[in-house]
Image (cartoon, rainbow, N blue to C red):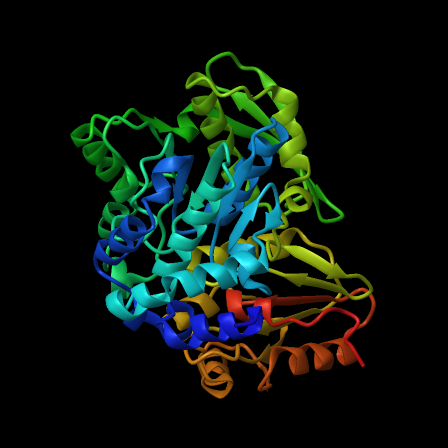
Length: 434
């Protein structure tokens, strides 16, 4: 098979959550364990860091990987979903895995697929673990796909576990309370392995403490260790002053991820690095500063308040759940523009009305959808939006919507594309190809 044919097989033959939703979600780790056992348990052949959370786990994973790579470690990075190319999910030192590897791996496991009937995600996890083991990496940063306890990535025994935060998302699968969601995320806490907790809420803190105690896992709350004393957001750049609670030491960090919500993620990342240093990892302060300043360049992260065009400014942000869109709304309040144009598409299994309620009524809206079965019809989205005072037209494709926004926008305007990772992934290069 060619690479294109291999991807077509993966996308069409295996249940894929991003396309069909809950039907692709497996409620135990049996398939992943069986696949990896057949492959010689590659996950046992490299060190890892496991990262879960409702929001921020992608940015945190990339920042941590950038720091480790800058410190000289051969660093694997497994994240999901991808925006443009499947191989974005599996990288080493910022370089996507080889197309030939993907082809050969899928051909190798085709008999297993027929026997086990795994999901798309279960196969991609096994693929990543195999690639990292074959490439003899020093460490892999592994981002949870969904939840934690039952996520396919949860067969690793990491050096460190990290949980960024808990919010409302995937409640149909993870539970209808913050405590239940926290319990699922806390499933990545392992026996005797330290865990760093980013943001906490009164409803979730005791859940983490209880499970960490049961597992004899040292638990560190990042917000107890450091705080952000000041930050400046100008020209889509972010500079943050962080203070150590124990010695009042002030340090300045520049981030090339300009979303103001990174002021929360950086506290988690810094504590994760500190815990790795305590475990013997050789990471200097200049490695931390360099990695954070160049995360996008080092790891190839996209879609986090990403500016892709000026005059007018076009920003892509993959925020798609309540907390994610609330953070986008906060960012908009800090951003200077004349008129705001919001291109939005969502999937069916989100709290659509709740998400929409955080967006400004003064914007001009362009309702659209990603080209996947889970996508909410643009007309239905527009109806839900109109009911709460958000007005705009409908478009069958994000790039049609973007062309319309560009025709109507003036040079001082802001065009924001958000609401779905898959929608952002379908945005064509600007300027549009002829």
